[in-house]
Amino acid sequence: MNINVLGLSDERFQRPLDLLSQLFFEECKVNLFEDQNANITINMNIDETKCLVIGSLVGGDEFSTHYDKNEDPKLHFKAIKKAVSYVFLKLLQEYTGIQQKWGILTGIRPTKLLHKKLKSGMSREAAFKELQEDYLIHEEKIALMQNIIDRQLQVIPDLYNLQNEVSIYIGIPYCPTKCAYCTFPAYAINGRQGSVDSFLYGLHYEIEYVGAFLKERGINITTIYYGGGTPTSITAEEMDLLYEKMYSSFPNMKNVREITVEAGRPDTITPEKLEVLEKWNIDRISINPQSYHQQTLKAIGRHHTVEETITKFHLAREMGMNNINMDLIIGLPGEGLNEFQHTLNETEKLMPESLTVHTLSFKRASEMTQNKQKYKVADRKEVEQMMNEATEWTSSHKYHPYYLYRQKNILGNLENIGYALDGQDSLYNILIMEEEQTILGLGCGASSKFVHPQTGQITRFANAKDPKSYNDGYEHYTHEKIKILDTLFPMTTS
Image 1 (cartoon, rainbow, N blue to C red):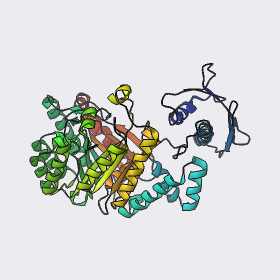
Image 2: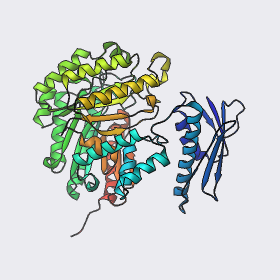
Image 3: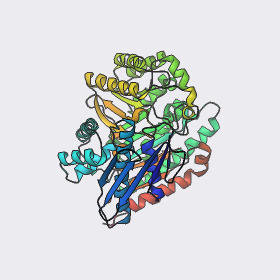
Image 4: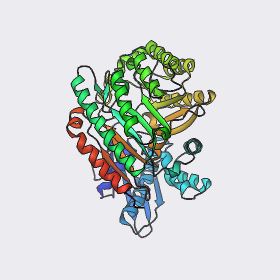
């Protein structure tokens, strides 16, 4: 599909229009100039005097919307961009007959938008009206957002007052194999022991020096999350030494509200590793089936069996893991509604404390995206049916939605939702999505988000994604983070 959008000369309109067009057409090119080969031509007119954006399809309907003028050039353009997106979406909905229930939102964190409005003192009614009228979000999605926000504030009553604490993400960049849909920094661990040793040395260094800074400034840690990769890919002895370093380096570990270790690949779980987790009082882990169909697991590059997922779940339960999360993915290659219903039926036999239901996303760098013809997936309608099935199943089994995020190129323009039984919600998942406090990323591929305690302004800093670069530069990454922390949490004199 080739779309001409005439009347917009500013290149800053290109990306938002690209993202919106991709909600309707799998392959689409938006031109801000006239292309004779275009399938659709849209005329846009920005009337600065009336603060009005008018758009029309050649030979079709016209839509318009007003925007709020602002003296700040950045905020002024932001308002115009939102208005252009509104008109563009209206025109494409009219042209295709497809309604986008998330409206003009293409970002990852829709609930953050509603949080912001409610924190400012806006009533629910006013906030809902604005989301519907200005962003074109459908009522069912707004209701989902509000349910999640209510749950989050119930689980973390001081969510808006955690700016003077931090959470920690620790990235372990190794897995048994790399999944076809994955773009995380994850490297097959076999044959890499030298690289693993060097990586762990650098990670211990980061933990030690960052921990010393936090102790010096009296900064408490809210949550700690080990992700990756698969953090249980390393040996039990390496895990033990890593957790010992964590406890000796970080301040007031008794005050940390939650520690999570992703053990997502069942083929990495052993009795010895579970004993290490129990030794260090870590009982929240993930064991991720993704699907209960062996053919699907093989197709996406997961080398464990369905039976192994079930066996390792029971082993973890027997060895004291009392808060187990499981991930499922809607829309995996070759799977439709019947296959997903089977996965839900198998999940019912285990009843993990929390369940994250992902919708497959075609991430640009993934093997699956680069070979789309090899991986046939369900159409939009069937993907929506699977999501509806997940919503009904979780509700009937007393799971509550507690966090939500979206991704680019996600099937059906849907979402990923975390569900939990009462009292089993992941605090870290809430904090990383709502960006209410600083999250420090340690390890390979880990990103830090520094949230200014007073202004809320976010500064990002990322460690290298590949182990060699990380091993060469861990000292630099550590001290750059500490420099930024020093500006946010300066030394106070009594």
